[in-house]
Length: 227
Image (tube, rainbow, N blue to C red; front, top):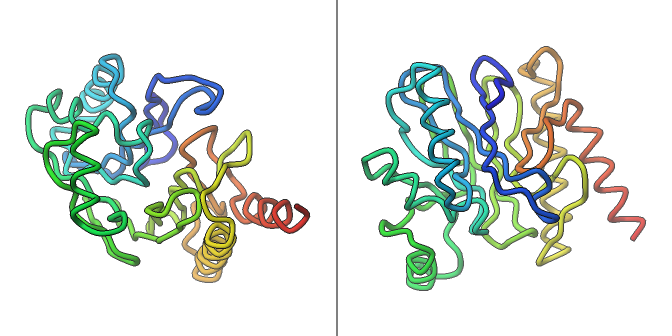
């Protein structure tokens, strides 16, 4: 459990591997008694305990929503367990894959009893102290979304941008377009002067905080061009 800013706490999902590095990052977001949770790990009892500990230590009484970056099991596989640990049916927001019938069926096979709340591009999710704006960023997966944290001029980057390695992708063209979208969003924050202490932060799903997000994204773009 690491406090990264006044409104962001990182909770590691405790699932280290060659693919997840030291594990998947989940994030407790907001400043009030009800906060958002970005992703929820893959379904480990140890993570449930860590989440509850982080909530207690910060005076958080309730998770208002789980905000999911994409369908991969290390990000959403723990949803059913987290709901049981919390003791209530917390809503989960995610971009829908393909058609609604396929999406509901596929997600229910992963142990999620309740359907997701559909997320569209530029949708806004609010909790006290945090405004999260959805950025459709397909490529890594068709349903991938990043979430801009407007108060900090930062972005929860999911698996679109990592810190410690490059990511894989299903669709290179879509992924390249998504990197361009992140570059433009970070530049927009800079022009508006809304960055956290002048930092263009990215909060990735794997690895440490990226302090200079613009430089990291530009590096990813250059890497793809060179390939």
